Each structure stands twice: as structure tokens, then as C-alpha cells.
Length: 148
Image (cartoon, rainbow, N blue to C red; front, side):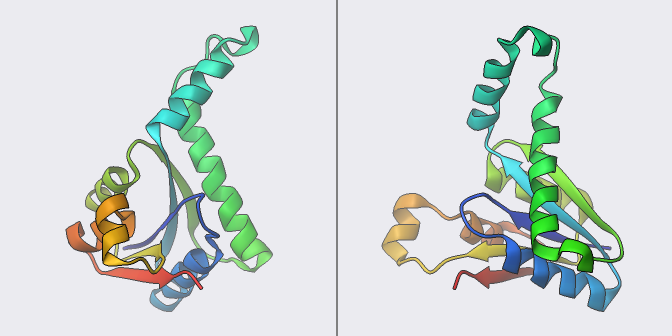
């Protein structure tokens, strides 16, 4: 099985990744660190690089690679040289909630590790919460690492 850590750019992913790594080590499982690049951001970046002649023939898959590179940088920053075992960076493009849930359906991880922060019920209702949506809609166990 796999331990899936979903990380974003809005908060420091170190605690999420280290918690997921501890679970992966304890259960002798593979760790996949997923970063979802919002579709709008990916499209804007892709359009801007296509205007440069040397990138005009690039496909949109470069944005998936970019999301994967971000996940790898998060892994390196959180674990450095301490990591051992099977750790992989995964990138996706789209709505973070939808893509995380799709990844959960695809790989059926033992645990999903995500970040969260304390919000009032009104804040959650007005702004939504990826964490809340994952907890409510995932069929796999979710470990929520609260922001300190």
C-alpha cells in the first residue's frame, strides 16, 4: 500500500511530509507526496512560456512536471538526506479537492495525510476547506496535521 501526503503552497508542508514519512516508515509503505497545481495557475504559466520561441512546441504536460518538481522540492526541504525507502513526488493539475480525491481513488492509500488550520464554522462555509472536503469525502483514513 501507499501513504499519500497532499501538500500545497499556502502553508509549510514540512509537518505534513514528516508525519506521512513516519507512517510510511512504521508500516513499511511507499510514500507519495502529491502537489496539485490549480488549473488556472497552470494555464497562465503555460500560456506565458509558449510565447517564448524556444518553448512554443511544449505540451501542457510540462505543467504536470512542474507540479511534480514542486512536490520534490517540498520532500527535499522536509526530509533532506534523512529519507530512506520509497518516496515519490506526484504532480497533478486541476481543482485541489477533486484531484486529491481522484488520487485517493486511484491508489487507495493506507492513510492520507493532509494539513489543516483552525477556522471558524463561518469561515469554512464561506471559503470552503480542502481539508474538510477530503475528510468528508475520502473512503480512506485521513490524518489531519493542524497548523501550529
